[in-house]
Figure (cartoon, helix red, strand yellow):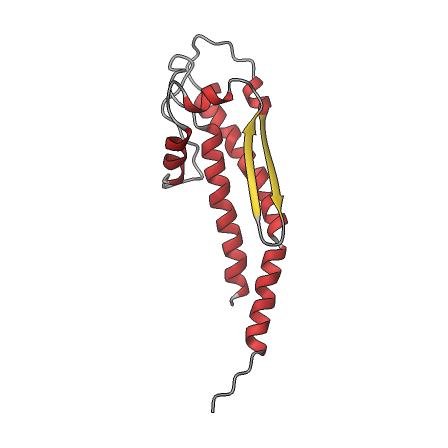
Length: 154
């Protein structure tokens, strides 16, 4: 006969539930980090590059935004830009968002912003500021929640 004491299992499940309760705080932390990542990406792809045909108004930088949503079972962070030309910065001339997403998700170091050499003189190249920041947010959500789960399993 096998006897099973489920108290230890229930204790671990209670710790896992507590980890889920922390998703709103994790999402808010990642929101701030992802916005910072987007600012770094904008500097790398726009503001710290060789000047060119366009006047730098800082509008793109001011248009950056990040929002977090979380419940007990789900967390998401959205990074966006409200300027009308944000898509053109992101994709350059003819690069697809789907292609950029694939590159961002395969980035060996998602903490580093992505650049393809876009500058004021090479404005037609993609500057995946938002895509890189969104991939970073995905990475950080997984990393921070994974830490909470691992801590619960100890």
